[in-house]
Amino acid sequence: MKTEIDLYVIAKVREYRLKAKHTQESLSYTLGYTRTFISNFENGPKKYNINQLNKIAKVLKCSPKDFLPQDPL
Image: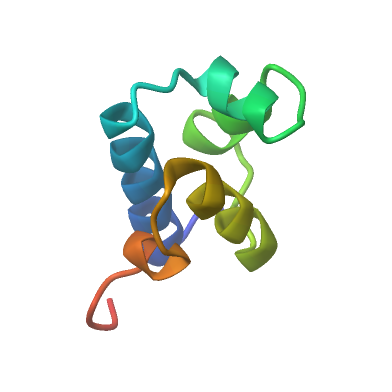
């Protein structure tokens, strides 16, 4: 089950992904994963870990902390 913080992080990754004009598929491939990697987080049961967020931040040219709330939820 996804928590409030999980949903926040997933929404922020999606926001930055869309700003960078990446589809779920293109970001997955750029990261070196299967076509459905990002979809499994945005639409499925998976949750990001810090290593995944770091890789995504490198591709989207931002900081991993951009995916986290400024204050605790």
